[in-house]
Image (tube, rainbow over all chains, first blue to last red; front, side):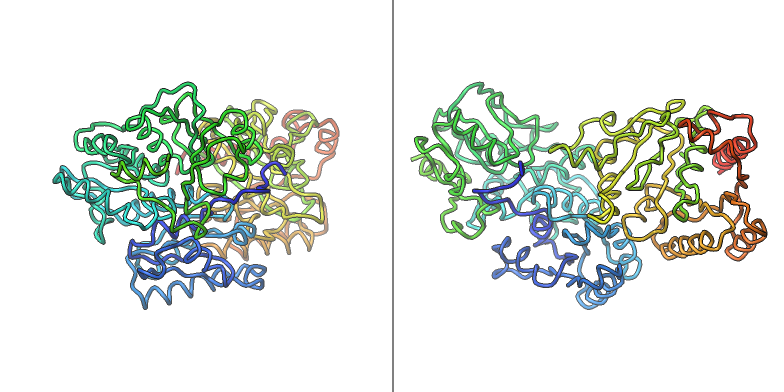
Length: 369
Length: 253
């Protein structure tokens, strides 16, 4: 029972992460799952569903197909749909039932690719890990499968790891793009994303979901990356230095002791902590409830994996807390709680209260008011 | 790296053959991993002086967190063989196939193959390929060859045929291929003739012919393989020859 969440919500699952990160890439995502679950991945966890089209399908796995191991239902239907839709790529991913019956997604993706000649890859999600893991693996596989290096384009930045699960569709992405374009830095974030991704000179990692891809491109194509979000004016200036970096850059934070803690997506929270320090002189720590990059952890930060652990830590250490409103239920009553909704955690409940902190000091001040 | 999965009817002697083959490889100086893929978790017991290894599924059931090192879910056996048992649920409950998949995922996460750098990996897999989990050892990246253990008994050959067909079903998927048979004799009538006929029909070779011998039983009673406990016996010679052959053929590839 240690890992059971009794009061707070759980984060979106790995399958939702795959659908989210690939949503605007022009491909076709097929989730091997029972019929009806499509709404979880492509509407409840996907605020773009009513605004932009995307080919996300559910295989409508039946009990009989599962028992009999009829993988051909999935492969035949996928091939049929792909021939009609001609997507740029096909991604297969899983859910708890295929995980239990041991569906070999890697082999099925090869079969589909042979039959359609469309680049096909798989992410064997089980529905039991966080969206970060699904999105991270999907982005990396997407790049490996669909991108070709032609020539290095200097002064060009890829945005890696963008999904509305972390950066809501309230202009955050647009502000990041504008920040660079205003300074004459080209941003690769369009329909030609996969064509150009390996040619870019630098990568800006905007969530932990982009970390796997960033490491892959650094190790294989020497593209240096920076892990930071332009929250507030000073951090925006820091991010604008990206064309000059020669190796991976993480935000440095050295705070050893604090009673001010942030809970949320790891890279977002680290950036917010850094921005608070630069703009407001507040030394904040991060409580990690999701995957994180160890190189960006400050001495005062804390990693937790259970609800009880998080609750106890906050009770013992936190006097000021910035987190999704649901965390208020496990926060100490005498602490100052500053609400910052996180779509991957509370979904649509508080979506209209999610602020856009990118390149905006005023919005940052509003959070801590 | 030699990567072989041994399949066959329940009780036909897969674990006996696998652990003797592992011991033969190890005696020939090879670094070996044996992975038992059976909820009974007794595949490697004769490489461990009769003391079983803690099955991976037992570890996962008892701990909230996954193990952080290979040592927590393995034991070193005869001549340095790394012994791993997937284990599985209580008979009649849960899902043993999923147990195999979870174990393999964990072994990947722990980088076992990179860290231990074996020359030989042997998978000892329960009975027929009854579900996706039991096909996991022959997926791309795991075993490259399947050896089916059979006797001349009707049900053993029936199971061997099922396994052969199951593996053949996967030929589009870059899975392991059936390399041949081990005839583990039960001394039934016309045993050699029956197994030879099956092998011929399927275009397979009988890679080893293990005589029915009391040395195997006596050694197993002491928690040993014949390679360890009766290395001059006819059975031990057969396993040595098979190991030497597999090494030679790998080198010639």
